Amino acid sequence: MHQKTISGMTLLALLSATSTAFATNGMNLEGYGAKSHALGGTSTAYDTGNSGVTNNPATLGLRQEGSSELGVGIRGLHPDVNLQTPGMMAGSDGDAYYMPSLSYMRKDGKITWGFAVLAQGGMGTEYGENSPIFSRGNSMGGNPGVPLSGQDIRSEVGVGRLMFPVAYNLTENTVIGVSLDFLWASMDLRMDMDGAHFGAMAMQGRGGSVGGSMFSTLGGMIGSGMVSDIDYVRYDFSNDSPFLGDATGCGTGFKVGFTHRFSKLLTVGGSYHSQTRISDLETSNAVLSFSGTGDAFSMANPVSVKGTIKVRNFEWPATFAAGVALYPAERWMISADVKHIDWSSVMEKFSTTFIADNSVSNGPFAGQKLDVEMLQNWKDQTVFSVGVQYRATDRLALRGGASFASNPVPDAWLNPLFPAITENHYTAGFGYRVSDRASVSAALAWAPEVTRTNADGLEISHGQLNWSLNYAHEL
Figure 1 (cartoon, rainbow, N blue to C red):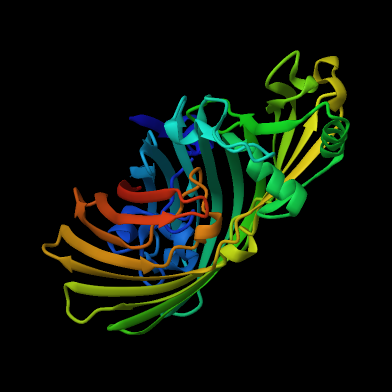
Figure 2: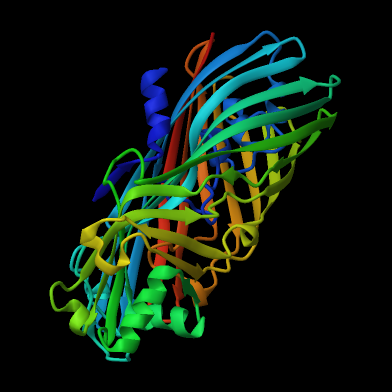
């Protein structure tokens, strides 16, 4: 079992003040905060505690005037990803990811304010060395079964947020809220691309594109006969840190929302999460390798080039949400949300620029760059969620829910390193008031296995069992 502590800057913030996540709705988590998590991810029209800053910041204003609350939490994600082709199977060892959170909220008069830091989501897989699925491929020239690197194959993408919300009670029944968010994102990638896929993008524009001065130099080598074939191209940038990926970037975003109580029986809410503005994810510790045949590989095969890589245009999508909370009886609440996630605006392509160091060891590629774009073409996703809460006693609340969504990743562009294909979730949990000032909440979520087959005939299955735990203390 491979364990990771996700969104490391979240953990560092917890340690000093005081993650890659594997997400389930595309790269989003299926719920934020144990209360929302247990209630199927609904969160727009009722008080979800301090976690409301991530869901709908207006819900922060639903708390009692004069109250202040410190919250800590931990989230566990346990994906089960398996690959299969005729005669071969492989599983991801990335099966345990942990995400801490920290928050403080206070309500003074009509204004609620505070801060929170947590992991937003991400993706990750760990296939290790000498995986049979990744052992061979086809060369650019069409030779089948050529050996690939046999080295570690892994991916890790994580996004975290530091949020500063303000909610304002316009009236006794209406609250508006806004949150200014500072984000960090990181990525590790160790990936072999066989020559056939590289050539299809480079020569035919199929599945993406390849350009830049390094590609021109490589084309000249092919034209002169120095390179007669390319077996694979390998990307390698990874620091193996349990906290933060090798390529990092930062940026901003914001959220706005409202709630309105029509009566004791009905409250409605809505929110908008902006698309982020994140800098390129960058590291100067990248290695790009080529393996093939020809005189260019007579001294070393593969030929490895050291340099800087930039992952360009990586953003988190805009999200629109609307929801209702119904109170049909004194001890009952029924919640329902619908969310629209605009994946198509941010997940059209995976774009990288590799810039070789201007050093002698990089030979003819010194100082040159390679631009690669791989198509992803994710579809927008609509998530329907419902939750039911029953207050069994004055201290104990029992919760259950479910969410339903479509897979946003087209089969044609499904990559085993980024298999974000889960769809539905079934959730349960509870909240318990330990004392007049302290409470705990817990949730468990099951995402049934989804199996898809990509354009290469690779069958990819992905299911999850996730949990969350929160502790809140009124100051």
